Length: 199
Image (tube, rainbow, N blue to C red; front, side, top):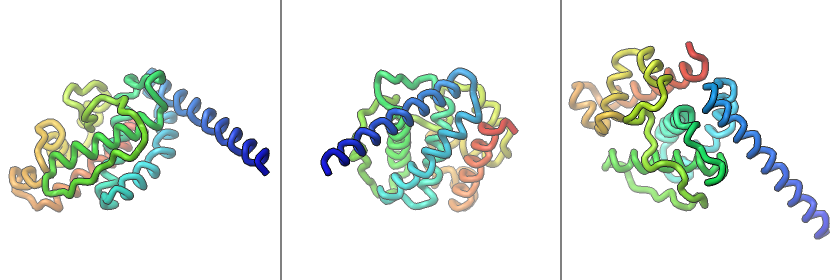
């Protein structure tokens, strides 16, 4: 019985190593060639897992989906910063998502604080990964922003460049808070489609 369990454990370890090698190859293709097919493979694997992780930490389904979109766009734009020596791709992606959640909590002070520190991964990503990134390290994001509707781009820039909470955006633009949230969700969807397909 123990021999069977040991064999199963070894097989599980081999599978994990194989999967990690695949993730590293995909990240490399994204970093070097902006390979949309490689990014789609990463998105399909990590997006549902990130959403489940966020929802286990008391994020609403809507917020979890927003954070997943931000995290995966950050993966696209920051792929060149991933360093295999510092940890696995999974660790890196989840750290980006965790930092985004913390940043969102800091901006939206009305949101209940929920500690996300039980994901046993050392922080090997830069602090405060954001959708746009103040330095706009990847020209693809700038190009993508130019292809989304003005009203959606406006709320994204106010949120991520001016670091403005959604409630302040609503007051600044004289629109309902629900409209701000809706425009941000639509903008994430547009950016994802543009970055994945180039359309």
